Each structure stands twice: as structure tokens, then as C-alpha cells.
Length: 200
Image (cartoon, rainbow, N blue to C red; front, side):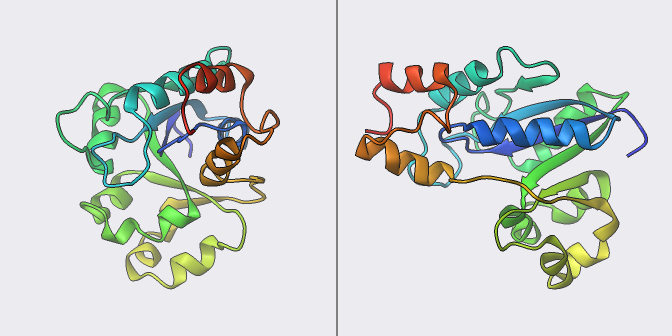
């Protein structure tokens, strides 16, 4: 990436974890041309069970990022009347930030699914993908097994050595059990969760 770049980091963030913030910082450090990370939480209109209300996930992300430089949160998908597709969201940012390249940061698990998304070839033609590799998921293996990804492999940038001890699902389970998760969640976010009695 040679042009000034903004990375759009999509996900459910249910709840947002310290590891999500660490990933964002890792992406910023990875390439000096990446000037900003924008977290984009998916809407509850997205077909995924167990998503906390949009306002709560957005508020938690805002709390997590409130003191961070070059890291922002967007409610672009939350304010739409229907589920927005990734290509639509990326095109909005592309039209808004005309002096920037836009790239999309996502986990290797999501990379496997891109071929099934809305207008996947357009995504790969127009935008760089930052694939976050963790656990047993290997970006090269995912690309090699997928004809479309193989065609656009030069558009995919791997970030490896991603250290995430627990997923949001595992953290939600720990919250339900009343276990101590202060190591994994920002203290303001944890206070918000307790005040609003989320994930109980």
C-alpha cells in the first residue's frame, strides 16, 4: 500500500475486547501509509444469533476507543433500514474519503467466506484485504483452496502472530458464569456491561 490508506475493521464486537484494539494498533504499525482504523460493527439485521443491541455494541466500542489516536468507530451499518453488505459499506467509505485507499480488515475465518458474499469479485478488485491470521487458520491455505481468492491473492495482505486468547463468544460465556474477565475487556466497557446487565 503506497497511497494514504484507511482500514475498515468490520465485525460484531459482541462485546469488543482488548484484543480487537490490539489488532487495530498492529495494523496501524504494520504500514506507515495506514493513517486510520475505523471499527464498523454489523447491525442486528445481520443474520447472526445472540447479537447484543446495536446501541450497546456501538457504545462499548466508543468507550474502548475514546482515548485512542487514529482509531474511530462508525455506525454506518447500524443506521441503515436494512442489512448493509460489505461492498456497500466499503463503497461509502471510498466515496467519502476520495484521497485515500480503503482496505478491509477481517479475520482469516471470514476470508474463507468472502466468495459467498455479495459481489465478492468487486470487493477484491477494488479493495485490499488485511487478513488476520490466528490459531490454526492459515491465510495461504485459504487462498489456495479458493479460486476467486487465488485470482486476487495480490490483494490480500496477511497479518500473522495475532494473539487472541479468547473469542468474544468465550468471553460472553465467562461473563455469564461470573468469572473475572478484567484482563480481556477495557474497564469502562466492563462497567458499561455491568450497568446495563448485558450478557447475563
